[in-house]
Image (cartoon, rainbow, N blue to C red; front, side, top):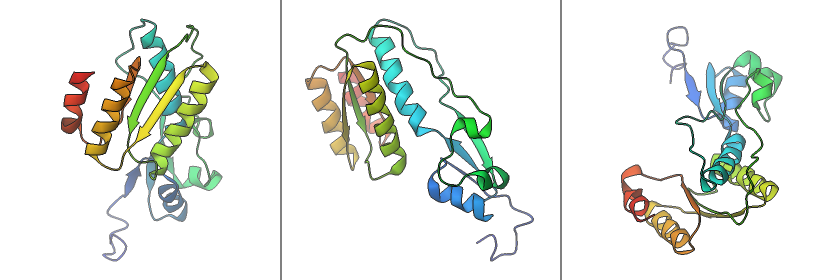
Length: 178
């Protein structure tokens, strides 16, 4: 629409989330930049902090999984997978030194048909296996299914319940139940 209106020189178009399509559009010059998140790091940090919290550690108010701005120059370097180290950014991640024991983590998330959440899932599963903890991830196609999944995880008496809510207000009763 910007090109059709002849406004490329007046409007800068920037996206977010760093999905493959957006990165391709930056590479092609149709998008000026994209704010790239790192779902792999999000999945890994979720598991690491679940272990720490289960072992009594107080989490910081902010955890940086890494975010960068990808412009056309950086996109030309790589279109397939953008990782923090490719952009000179270092995400905060470290080995969890507390013993995991029999920690059980439940994660109620959105659909895995979204590549972003599927990548978070794969990274969380890999980290849980590496840390020796039990991770049960349930995905849902809508809020009602997600509420049921969260309730099922609570009934399983997980030690930690992680949520990626479809809708903040709709998930509040489950959070209060937990």
